Image 1 (tube, rainbow, N blue to C red):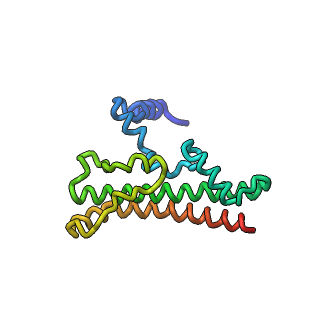
Image 2: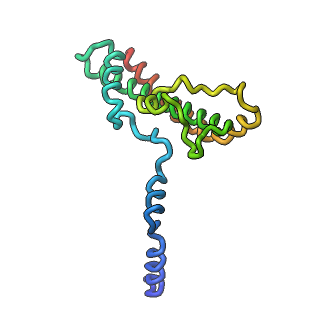
Length: 175
């Protein structure tokens, strides 16, 4: 049996442990679980649905009659879109590190490039903002890359999983 004093103490502690009270604290804590959005299945993202269907049809050889084949083609297409999303996220991370190494990050940590916003929406890797290590001081670039190394390793795990799903689906599709 729990004593009345312990119940009162637990209630008092619970009132102090209910999370942030200010609107800025609530906004900050609402983003705790969000880091890059790659855990969200690509099929749940509206802007990829048409691309997945078109790619699935291409993987299935244009055959809509075989439901099983089309389903494996959809799995492969979703995994392919995931691979491109991960590679795009890795590219953005590397661009940010390069821009920070040269002091071109505009103070807010965001990369400014003409094609970045459009290609990020499409899940494509921007090609006009390549990081050229020859133009940066070696120690500065190495430091910037070392700071994002753990994030790159995390993204590599997402990429390997997506590649594995795509390979498995394409094998089933070939059978």
